[in-house]
Image (cartoon, rainbow, N blue to C red; front, side, top):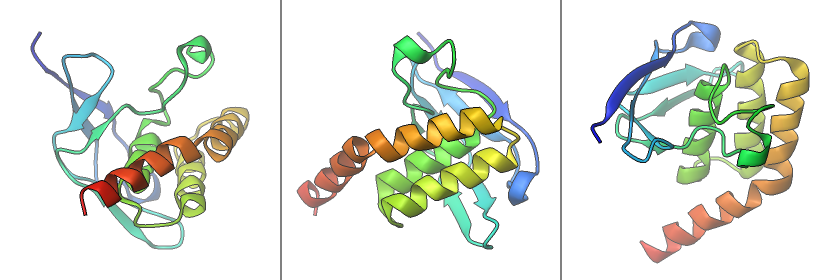
Length: 139
């Protein structure tokens, strides 16, 4: 199966650098950024996700996809959140807070923002710890 390139989001919320452009990988569930993606938070912090970074967007159990699918209006926020978890450049709380802030700027409805935020606060430690473990193994 060949890779497919998609533009998943285009807009200027919070100084987005442009559209989020990804290549959907053959497994159909993971995507690779085809160009850097940059956001500016309300506090003025610039976060750049490099081209080549791989994401699964929002890591939502399949059971809940009818309510919160893995991709949607919140996809740019999910990509940035995945990157922050992967790199550990900020605390887990800071990464989750950026996720919430970006979802608000992207116009994600309040109820969905709250569900997704509390899901990462309650269950995100698994992904966070896995990323920290990979860091120490490769150090």
